[in-house]
Image: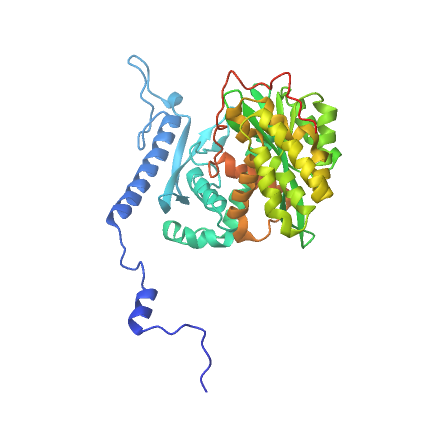
Length: 424
């Protein structure tokens, strides 16, 4: 009796092709480069030791200036063979022979010489670590990196290696979280929370990451903070804002928020009096949630006519018309719009060229969408701290870029002092 097989049926020629793919892809250029890399590294380590001992290999005494006497005064140690080391770099894995030496110490003893180029127990170059981390950030989980980099590293990289490399990123992450913000010329701040799924106590749990983006005086966006606080309460947002102020962040001229009550309360306590813009996209979703689906298209059309009007006067007129119509047709929609108050239209106090960027928190929403695309292969992240660190690393490594604000005018960024009356 034959046992069943799960291998798909293929013609014999296709099976042979699949089994031997890349077998005949020998590249003499790459092979030559790897051989030269070994020779170069050997020469580098030998030269480093020659400099420490002040003499070349096989030279017993140091060469002193003319008129001096030769002797043991110029010799501070002696070689004693080589040690085999395996090094993994972007050139692949190579075996090298690192010279060994004993150096004389001040107390009359000797100590083993340590290369400053090749650290003790180092098995990979920093460039190789950066390549591994980049593959992980590009959306490849730890198990798939081995296959993705198999041709380059010859199977020398596994999921454990990827995890160790990723943990090295934490030191840079800690330094970024503690950096001073006193020299950052921030004039506008965008704040929003985003939800990610992580593994807590062996269960899938949704947590909130609190994200803060700043806009410099030249219009360039920059990530200021990303914190895993468990939720979007007033206390959580207050802790984030206090940390930013404590690290020297100046009082901004304009704020863009998602409308969460906890954030509103925290802003009132820290930056009271700063003009605040409620995200128009979030408010649009709220309006639709207060009405049956058959009214969604009509609400959207009226809302867009109001929000995307060309002038401040048109925005005010269409706001009054929207409220008048929907108080009669579906009162909950009108009350939801009134809840936001004038903060939904603070963008009209800026130059019209900046209205598009000032109306919403889309700068953070776009980062979140890109973040989700990168991590979807991992299903769940191992912890809340890992989620925040990964979000930051995608920006710090250049995997995700933030461009300047559209329509930015350096000399015309401050809100107009006297806003138009937008009251209903």
